[in-house]
Image (cartoon, rainbow, N blue to C red; front, top):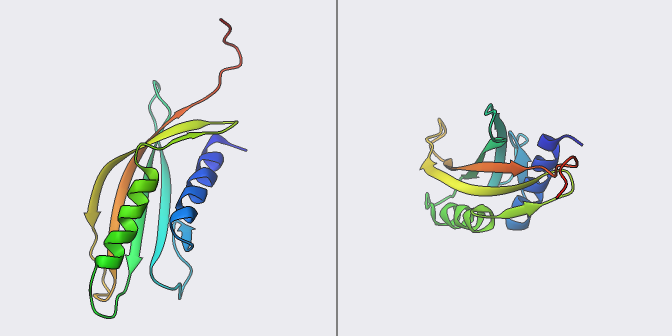
Length: 129
């Protein structure tokens, strides 16, 4: 499995522990609110393998309140920020970078995006002490 796919898999597992409705890139049409989507993008840096992770929380509360959405995103932050993941193919640490609200064309929908930086570390098999 590629490093990116393994990282995505580990992230999905961590997000599913927070909330049952999690999708990569976009939710299916008619998905029940609230839900999470996430996107993982690589950063071209010759000195360090890094990714940017965007986690979006979506809700369409009948009363317009964002309390449930803010609580969900707080739970995501608790689950991911400063988390260290150790796996066979790749290990990584996650840091929260920024949080912001995103306006949707549909005024009923409330959305939050939390952006994380992921720094990966690989086991080197050619290194001996």
